[in-house]
Image (tube, rainbow over all chains, first blue to last red; front, top):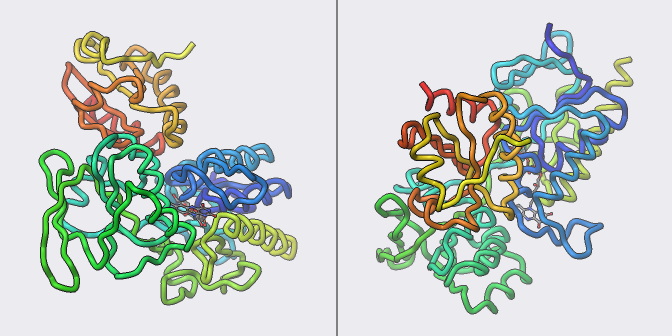
Length: 308
Length: 108
Ligand SMILES: Cc1cc2nc3c(=O)[nH]c(=O)nc-3n(C[C@H](O)[C@H](O)[C@H](O)COP(=O)(O)OP(=O)(O)OC[C@H]3O[C@@H](n4cnc5c(N)ncnc54)[C@H](O)[C@@H]3O)c2cc1C
């Protein structure tokens, strides 16, 4: 017997958990699949300052778990498993395979978000958990009093660099362009912080060490000159790639790989919705992801009502 | 009562390295969000593997030696020992099924 749900949600980040909250509160049988940490990207953020309702800010992990509890309170079921495939059956309903188990759903909301990009340089994969990190909030405390580098020039890179200065002696921000992409307020804070310095027009060529990160080889992109720099850790924040592989061949994607949806989060496939960072033209904020999740759940409800 | 006990730098050798049963140690800290998701999974496993595996947790804020010796630079980290030897590692949050698989591999 395969379990059939009214609404299956792929991804338990801000968009997915909010969709689950709406769907379950609307008395629809609801399942959320999460292959990693519930809360998604925000779960590793120390302080979320721009989610309305929390004037003092709130820890990202706590915020995610609060939305999770709220969804579970209304009966949403959460399954910690990665969805490997999504297919639409002739009957119009959907079949999902997660961790080798099969599930059916009459409608599906995909909120798989985005994954951080890798540098793709020698040493990176080898030293994950040994000095290479994609989460300063998680790992910065292990480098107390040491010198570290942060790679990237956007909001995430500067945010995490600022956080890291609580523990480390110095942070060098390495960015491949000559200007930062981060918002003005973060740039101001980072530039005002004496523990932070910048190496612009610079890329990381290799990460080296014996059993853990000890140094990086850097390249000045203007002169081509290589140099070595000691570092205890390399924190990498160089953007994200949308997790759209489940949708390939089903849903139209934009040039960046985000799913095309209309303003009600409908895709071109009836009963299939996409919300949050995975959709085209997303604001890539938690509040907009949550808003999208609510919209998608309401659209799914309309779809199910019309099915009868 | 929880079957996951605290282990410290001081009790490490006796509790972990000299243990007759295989041991799983959960390295965590109070500020680490994902650790709070791993904790309950380890609790559940400690019930399922009662009398087969001993379960410990180590607070990395309060113990510096063992985490440094084992090169722990990211938490949550789970280390599995058998006969005093490291047999398996799980770094970062993984669903229970993954952790269980890794534990089974280490026990085999
Ligand atoms: C470091 C950092 C700091 C940030 N700070 C802020 C901030 O201060 N304020 C703010 O508003 N926004 C912030 N953001 C952005 C915000 O986190 C995202 O906009 C938001 O998390 C998007 O939510 P989402 O649900 O669309 O996707 P995600 O958060 O990416 O969640 C997607 C989830 O789906 C899961 N998943 C993916 N594929 C599968 C699959 N096949 N099966 C099962 N599960 C799957 C993933 O594991 C993940 O948990 C920050 C982001 C980062 C990286």
